[in-house]
Length: 325
Image: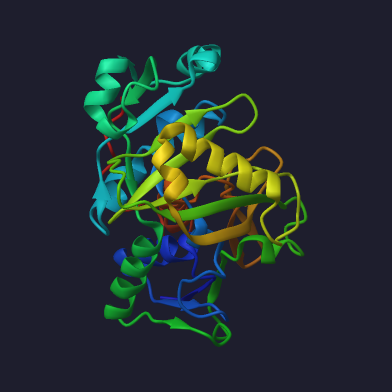
């Protein structure tokens, strides 16, 4: 069997390596930056496995294929299945109604039900939507869990170049733009806060007319707050506007966030094609897996399966799919 060399050890490369190795392929994994870390776009992700919510502004493949991600990740890392709660300030009720019309898999919840689901939100929000089947994970733990599992199979992340004679799978995100000129970078900005006096148990999405925001619990009073979507290719520091919007949203969820400690400020560029959908494409002997946009953890498992099918033929028994709702 011809060896397969995967370039890039972010979420796409690690998922592709995992899927190929599971099917018996001879795999090597290469990344000049080394193991998962802040140099990977996927390090800064929210980690929401939320295909029904994401359908609000995504195409149908994200809804359909994203559902595979819940079970795929569930057997490889810790996945918390407590759903997603979507809320809006009373003045933004129209945004909540529009979100409900454009998504599936939710039920409306009243102020009392919101307070039951998340007591620390209190009675601030008169209505919301609960997406019970959704889940979330810690992206950094998930990347490390995949890397550890691959290393245990004799597939470490190598800093050197791919061996000659191997079939190449390029999963290098924006670094592949010289070969995939349609790619663009969409800037995302996020914060990690520590607020030990606040207890939230599931991702909360706060709808907002300008910048809808989300907050994802990481455990031990730590929360990821994100993420802006800026059509700009500046990987530089967070803007004052983004910082104000993110912190204002946290304060609107619970004023106790005003006392939170800011642990991290992150910015990076998400690789995206013009239609914002990821693709598996072939150029000569190189297979490209790219364009994950804001759906890295949601779509990488399906792309990994598609890549493995293209290189090895369909699996005799498919990876278990999450039930469609």
